[in-house]
Amino acid sequence: MSKHLVTLNVNGEDHVLYVDSNERLIDTLRHRIGLRSVKEGCGTGDCGSCTVLLDGRPVLSCLILTVQARDRRITTLEGLGKGDELHPLQEAFIEDHAVQCGYCTPAMILTAKALLDRNPEPSEEEIKEALGGVLCRCTGYYSIIRAVRSAVKKMHGVRRMENER
Amino acid sequence: MLYFDIHVPESLDDALKVLEEGGGEVVPIAGGTGLIPRLYLRRTRPRLLVDISGFKDMRYVKRDGGYIRIGALTTISDLLESDVIGGPLEAFVHMGKMFGSWQIRNVATVGGNVATSSLIEDLVPVLEVLGARVKLIGRRGERVVAMEKLYDKDKRATSIRPGEMISEVFFEEKKREYWTAFDKMGRRSYLVMALVNVAIMLDMDPKSRHVYDVKVATNAIGGSTPGRARRSESELRGRRLNDGNVDRFLRAFEDELSPRDDFRASAEYRRSIAKVMAKRLLEYCERRISEGGK
Ligand SMILES: Cc1cc2nc3c(=O)[nH]c(=O)nc-3n(C[C@H](O)[C@H](O)[C@H](O)COP(=O)(O)OP(=O)(O)OC[C@H]3O[C@@H](n4cnc5c(N)ncnc54)[C@H](O)[C@@H]3O)c2cc1C
Ligand code: FES
Ligand code: FES
Image (cartoon, rainbow over all chains, first blue to last red; front, side, top):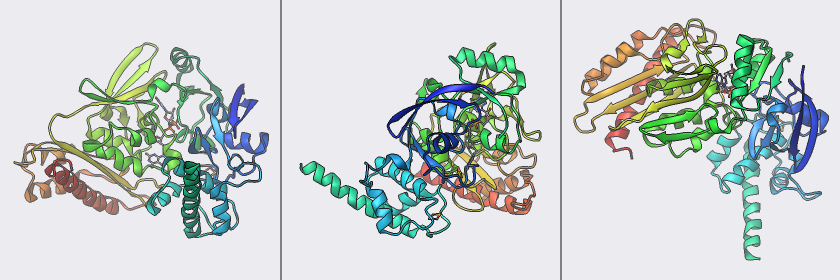
């Protein structure tokens, strides 16, 4: 099997790696780069827990070959906060008890971030629509939707403050 | 996962060369959402994949001299975000919103959907009612095939030859008032494989209600059902859209289907929901045309 030299920009940092032809992005991220927030549930595209952002769009890292992600920008949950400072979505998920076992949480937060980047004030329907591809077996989803809505409020506050400055 | 190699082509020429030299053992990979699960399940065992996902110039939706052209690498999300895909082409919007999940739509491509012939593809009936054609390119040149000639539904195969790949799908833009609509029925409302999907195109005079043209296609229904239901279409084409003619159209449609019976749904169930879906879609298109597309 042939190996390929690829460059991946992961959470703002370039990684240059030799990867096998059949290596999946999820395995590269978890086992070679050590980003354990990326979770494997089904491995076939149905659960969404392996979601990462590829050039800002949510995609399933279990269905992408690492070679195909060459030269692209990848964001995992580890890339969201700044040091000890959490992203408003992360804070809201904690405050609104949107996390139980936590397995779906990285995917939920990343997908919600991609939504808010495009649509800063989504309706409840739009939130449900966007998050529909990530399954959660614990929370019953209500607390997750609530958390996304409170993150919207937090972020608007921040944005307003930035505008006033 | 199986052992296979992947080739990152330097140019389109290089990709076509490698595809041709490999015969059937070498296949293109675009988004991978169709191919990768099949590789895991060992349903397919190619020796080499040619990564065509980097060909950015095959990613477009454009109007061009009376035609609408969609590049093979256009994703389902690209379709939903395109300015060209609105108004009477609403079937693409209906289809796109029901396609997989956001994650899937961001990578799944038009070419990948059209090239697959597993009888459940959602884009296929939409393209069929628009009379779309598929442009295939290979080292020896290009050829154009009508959507309906692309599939051998019984054999679950396409007429794409080894060494060829889809570069675009295109269809003529209609000049008269028309509308398109799509619906899909599955076992749940999101991220679901269709039990039945139906697309309709209605080209009707809003005042006299004369039907210049109507096309209806199904895909997921299975059996040996062709994409288009031509006999049913002829019950309405050239006639007035009134209750009697619509009724004849729907009865013919029901007869013309030969749905499959499987663990997902019985043939009878598929037949009866397909009829209800066709009725609603037809009414929807009629309403949009009567309202002048508002
Ligand atoms: C979780 C999940 C949900 C899904 N939901 C839906 C759904 O709702 N509706 C639906 O219709 N499908 C669905 N699919 C199937 C799949 O996503 C689509 O068929 C998709 O359009 C395939 O595109 P791709 O770019 O990912 O194809 P790939 O996986 O890259 O390729 C699929 C096949 O097409 C061939 N191919 C790709 N591009 C070309 C080309 N340009 N020329 C010639 N051959 C080519 C490949 O060799 C391969 O055989 C789903 C899949 C998953 C995993
Ligand atoms: S692990 Fe990727 S979708 Fe389930
Ligand atoms: S918190 Fe357990 S799966 Fe969502």
